[in-house]
Length: 364
Image 1 (cartoon, one colour):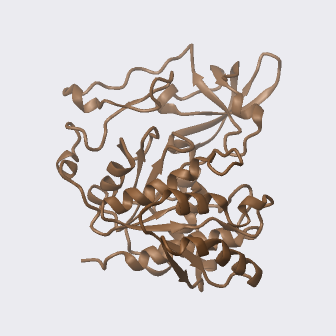
Image 2 (cartoon, rainbow, N blue to C red):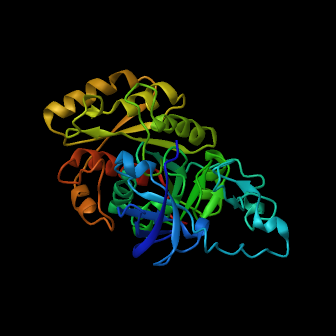
Image 3 (cartoon, helix red, strand yellow):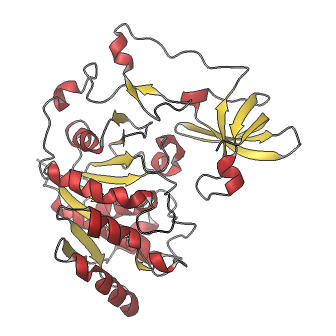
């Protein structure tokens, strides 16, 4: 459950879109690194008293290893401006019935300026959607798309399997010039557009952001228990189904690694095999990068063989992708491993992006 602490801000450190990193001292003299979301709690300043949730910090989580600012109890932020039309404030409640639930304007609500575009929207018109298990695949997929078709408009749909605030992701801040926008769906929030479901989020990417290709994944902080079904990335299979139902082109980015110390994630991760092999009922293109080391290539082929009847296995060349990945505008990192440490993981994601780029229609 929640582990509470009271602290005092001693330094304000990095800022990125929607987030402020700070240091706080606790009554016992201990110092902690903390994160505040100004849209929820206001902007902390040195000397402010802060109420903190330190559970993830004490657990030592790689992506969640911060104390989180719950409130500035002595300097509460003002209420947001109330629009003349009260409906324009929105009525989408996310992180529902938690103490910090935000109330937002949904992209397809009646008061939304995008209501007309989405009121009867029901088709992605063949837009390719690259589905990935982990948030760390996002910049690699973008690099793969940009390698061959840099002019394409790329949108990102962030699902609610991991970090709910899009603001937690420094990657998204670094990719601001690469994306036409982010849609946060389900319980996730903080994107350029807010949507209630994966389906309405994909439609917003196509009809509001005018994306040529969309990437969909959970945010940072994948949840997993080490069992076949106990991981948040299982929703990648449902995203394949949603894309197909809406007339899009589902592309599955495979989680491939020769470096992960856990046997269940070496070769093709069991996350990909379960999500695409058991959950995804619609046909998708599963992208296999060429040029893997022979032993790894044989393991990947063997793992994917049972999926060949349900999906289309597409082999994609990787020439030029290493350079594209090295030129990414944000650091590449998955489970603490960079491009040099786990090249196959990032090449597989970039290959999925490269393939999706071939499916996008030519510009008018």
